Length: 97
Image (tube, rainbow, N blue to C red; front, side):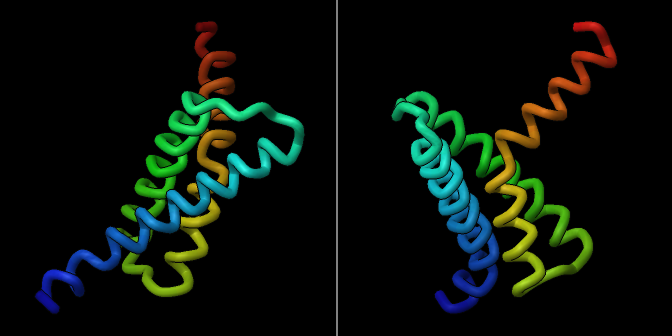
């Protein structure tokens, strides 16, 4: 069981940070006058965990761990929906879609 936890701890760690970042991002949305919507919250959570997951894979690829990984995964997950929206907007502008 200890080996299982050791091998899978980074996945749990990245997932927990991504979910925490999505909750923080949505809390800021509400604080800035946004209205609560379960659909919006779920979409933001999916986008944040996706961004955090991609950041996790990048960190693993470059053999990062510990605080460096925590910071990168958290920031990418927190900025996830905004970063994806900006990249989508640039893509649509460049391609004319």
